[in-house]
Length: 303
Image (cartoon, rainbow, N blue to C red; front, side, top):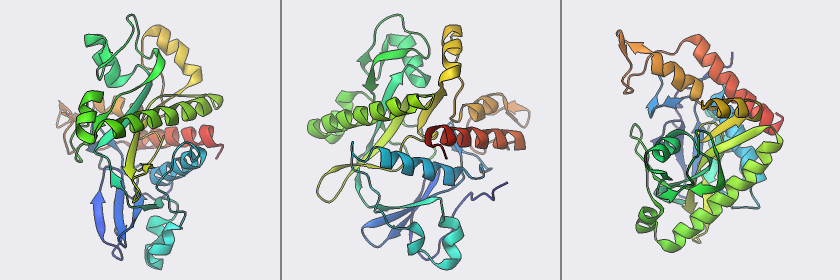
């Protein structure tokens, strides 16, 4: 099994921040080295055990999508080799799992696009017929395809906190009407382009989350990562119809297997309360999760 990296430790560059998955280091004043660790989180809690190979796989998938979508929107990649900015001794922590990117001014909102009704969107729809203030037709079911993809922004939470869904009007109050309109239009365009491609590979992208920033010229730019199992809900086409007809969640390539296991896990004889520390993950849960991520990469990219 591939050796896993739970937390990077580069001493040649200043550490800016550790997120749920990525460790970010400053490279001068205008670039950031993003190292994708093998950490995995669920219910906004980082698990104690890493998923071997996950960071490299996420990086490979994000780079694939950045290339595919470069005509739709500019991205934050510099095109430079990430290992060129670290010492030879640090290269094993960086090789294959890092991106060297432009430092942007990040927008304080996440751009969520939903093509299907699932997760928190399905829960809200059952309650009031809406998702984040977007009114939807009556009679939709769990995993229904929406008439058109909808844009449902969220605020960015600190590590360990939950992202909060907000309405478009609330987003306008945070970043202004012009930028909000740009973000909505670009996020939907990116989603539609990616979803159309994924369908040709037998994968439904039910929903996804983009992050944007502004470059030195004020140009709206895609940043962080795109369209990986960490930020998206991927469903294999062949399992969708049966699950939809039964009213159950379709099989997925994301963290659903891990979430399902955690829902029945116990800590000290009690059901886990979804706060750190998390239950120790058994080897079979780690292996199954790694296999799901690998299968998604292979289907989408042919890698």
